Length: 134
Ligand code: FES
Image 1 (cartoon, protein in one colour):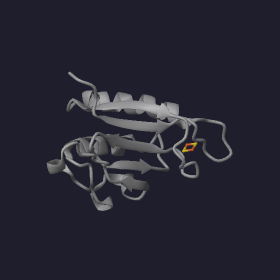
Image 2 (cartoon, helix red, strand yellow):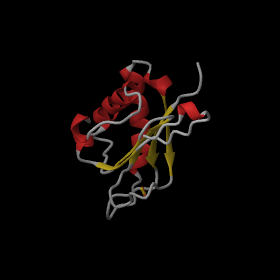
Image 3 (cartoon, helix red, strand yellow):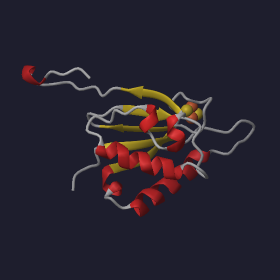
Image 4 (cartoon, protein in one colour):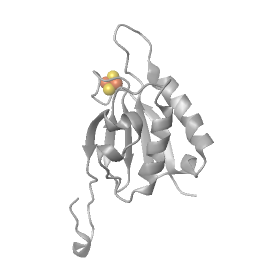
């Protein structure tokens, strides 16, 4: 089995207003557990890790999905207590999409309205016959 080709990155610096808690660490732990419990080989499909800030600081906690040759998403306002099922459902959906591109109405639950950015995949072809813009 090779390296995962997809990543879920969670901000570990986000704080809720007026609080010193850093919910990103709890979110990482809960999401890893839920992804493992979901089966479907999702554990092999994703690397789940943290990063200190993804410039969505006003919408804590932020979570990004990105992958080789796939669109990148940044979600905000994610809560470890209520949004894990939506994150797992989107992981399954993201894995099934060749280019990772989907409309807001097709995303699960809260992820329909909490998208901060959707960025097309950067595909850089090595051969002229494979040049593509997406
Ligand atoms: S502190 Fe979390 S996105 Fe900036």
